[in-house]
Length: 158
Image 1: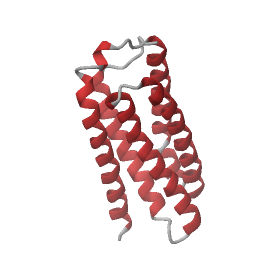
Image 2: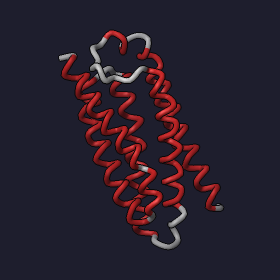
Image 3: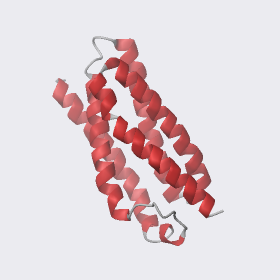
Image 4: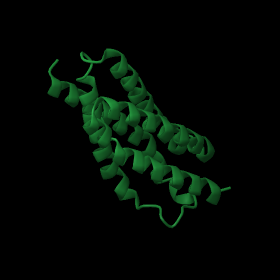
């Protein structure tokens, strides 16, 4: 498989995970989510789809770049892609916990773990390719913001 095809493949997987997560989110956006208290810094709902789309694309490009390094450093790349896959699955799980189960506490605990796994992914990617690492910085920042937002929503709705 060519190097560009690998990148396209990983971008497509990331976007598919994002799309599947959005299916869980959509049902609660008009029913449960409007009924809970949110902090003043909560972005409007329309912000999330374009931000996540861009982040999933950047994440996919980053993952594809790392996959392309498999032949030169098999052990490190496999470890990095393991963490990449773990954070992608945890990303989808957050939507299910928060919007599917309406369980803000579990979502808060899970997003802290997600941030830590993204950070480890960033460290591993940065060691293999600086560009791949840099592509994860906006994602790390956004999930950091989402962690603060989730924690605020939890405490406002105790």
